[in-house]
Image (cartoon, rainbow, N blue to C red; front, side, top):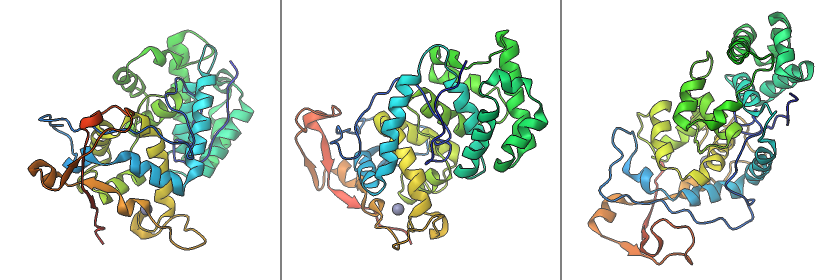
Length: 333
Ligand SMILES: [Zn+2]
């Protein structure tokens, strides 16, 4: 089977991946987005999750819009990515396996190096069955630019050999995952060395168009800064918490935007030192004014305005949607 598509380039992990299936959303940054309302689930607690009450009431739409205005190239790329996913779905494609291997190569390295490693590998071996016929040393050499070449090469071979043996086929494939539920996919991919929860989540989002919100280091840091999760949250707990509250339709854009934003914004970068500081000085961070509902006020009914729906759009609570007065999140600096 001939591989489709090439590598992208923006969000970590995400970038390296290409292709996938059903795409639910369309529209670029300039188009009016469908309003997505986060439901306040009365009396229903998200138990066992490290979610602050605020996280369930964040105006995610506003967060995405603010970030998309600042980084329009990210959302444009996602539009193209979704189109590609639609086209690439189908028999004979190696989209999911491509996504798995490119995401493996993107771990612990820069996007640029991951792309170069993936390009070297796929130029030399246009199909994974051809790669299987190569030697480990050969693969190691091709992906050396991404670092940890011996480990990565061993894992890639283990994955390809396992699939090939299980499928009694020279042409290993992961397309069978498309018939599985999200939980089944996680379990299935979790069998392979080198595929942790974040990698799997990236593969599901970018290779399979599943509604996933991967949490990487940028996403975790910004989620804590925004108080979307508690300060003690881990990547794992934040992943569970945020996946439960971020609207599905916004997951891909929000993930990619946060990864990009975390590399360029002085407020949101690690130690306020962006990896790629903007030439024109610090950006005006749209997340500094992201509105969250004041939960206490809301519960006490103080300063809470009930607003009408928005032309029937967006579902959620519709006309009963309650929009509490926004509290500007104070930066904790
Ligand atoms: Zn920022």
